[in-house]
Length: 208
Figure (tube, rainbow, N blue to C red):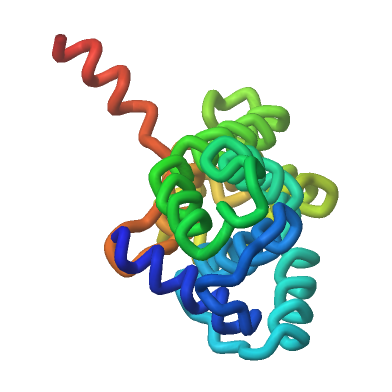
């Protein structure tokens, strides 16, 4: 996993045409880490080269991702903590590699907050049936909220997230939807970052 992180950081540096021994200020380091984070969130599926093309791709990516600003803030907080700007010479590829290793280690914590937001968005429109949202309200929420909520009925049924016991009034099952595999980030060839199954905590307490 560490080697994969370093390889992707190298990919970001090469795409921006930055030699490993380049002395970086905080702004350039942040830019390189932003490109790394884009590659991370694309699961390594990135082949654009050259600073102009990379920055254009980064702009398109950041415009599409609604919470990119929050991702950047979170990543920058790690950057400041791991690679503070003590001296200009201290910031280079080695500094950045320490930051990306910590990003990979801590991203699950950031994702946990995102999962809580996803759950909260759905529970704001919870129906009288506990843990369920009317399908019509689900789609309506997707038009104005942070999350898109645009999955088709057949797809929701395949996920096990559709309660259509009453065909006239279908519901989305909140925990099944939140924990569904498509909500995972396939960030690595070794692991996926998913929402934690909160039921496991309750089962652990009961088993204890």
